Amino acid sequence: MIYADNAATTKMSEAAIRTMVSLINDTYGNPSSLYTFGQQAKEVLEKAREDVASVIGASAKEITFTSGGSEADNQAIRSVAELGRKKGKKHIISSAFEHHAVLHTLQKLEKEGYEVTLLDVHENGIIRPEEVEAAIRDDTCLVTIMYANNEIGTIQPIREIGAICRKKGVIFHTDAVQVVGHLPIDVDADNIDLLSASGHKFHGPKGVGFLYTRKGIRLTNLIEGGAQEKGKRAGTENVPGIAAMAVALKEAEATMEKVSARVQEKRDRLIKGLREIPHSALNGDEVCRLPGNVNFCFEGIEGESLLLLLDDKGIAASSGSACTSGSLDPSHVLLAIGRVHDVAHGSLRLTINEDTTDEDVDYIIESVKEVVEYLRGFSPIWRDLQAGKKEFIL
Ligand SMILES: *Cc1c(COP(=O)(O)O)cnc(C)c1O
Figure 1 (cartoon, rainbow, N blue to C red):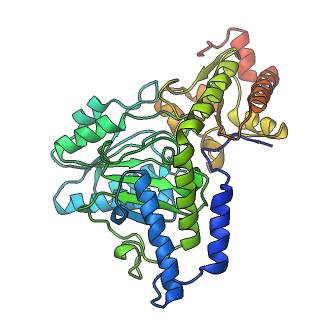
Figure 2 (cartoon, helix red, strand yellow; figure 1 turned 60 degrees about the vertical axis):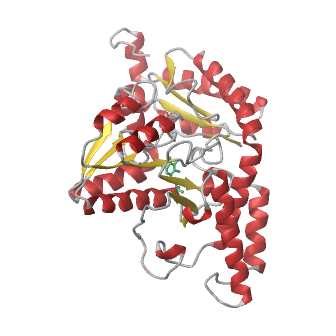
């Protein structure tokens, strides 16, 4: 099988697996216990906190471990919303193409009396900092903009957006789940106040992530109970998972430069190959995009059928978020960058990584060409397009 869905999840690294197994076997004490066996687990936990912090230029005290990216997003947004409420500031700025962990939290807050401005994403999938600035009001408490989009891979001008927020005295959160472990991040240089990350997107385990919170910003609990994580996230810590995540992140940091250059080269070859398919288009900016992300629309076909036929050929890919939710709506991300419904339905996301070989890239190109042609062969939309009853958009 060729695994080309690394934006959905990644394979755990050998070192992360070894770390996890060894801790499960040998260091299973509760880090809150006072005897030595518990304190050994506590040491592992705090070492992981330091390691994770060091990779993003933070200090260990600013890291809260969570169950993943979704929880970190929820906690970040809810916490700042609460701080805002206390000051009578109930306006939040975000974008139309955020992850649902952000969008659905914001929808809930709207029901609780907050006002949310979702910024437009332009055709290239990049938010303009000046539009963030223009949207900021006296009662704005939070700007939350993702570092890079999980579907189309576009990287946002986070440093500029952060600088604007700092200037205006507004707290800035970024969902950096697709970027941590893939590209260098420095929370100080990037002017970030809160940042969400998830272990399983960088070869760590699933169900574990972290939230960076700049010193001085008070978190609100989502989970009440014990005093773990300085009382901000109750529940016995997932020490094996957390330590394995930290190992995976340190590994990713050490190889980042080389890996991203290599992956980017393969990505560009994949893009070049798929562009040869008539009436196709790359989604999102070609340059400001994650090293491993390729996202295309092919006119006249259904992304889901494409996906299933590629699966038959041994390729694991994604067609956007629609099929997972079982809804007929096309991806909100593709709609946000201005793709019309028909075109957005025919989308394909391939997210490759360092394990993807040149032969894999060739095979993917060949297979997608074959399957798109096959599907167009009996697509009523394609027939109408060919007959001139419908206008080509791409
Ligand atoms: C995967 C992902 C999440 C959710 O992370 P989980 O750890 O799966 O909860 C949030 N945001 C983005 C951008 C993601 O890609």
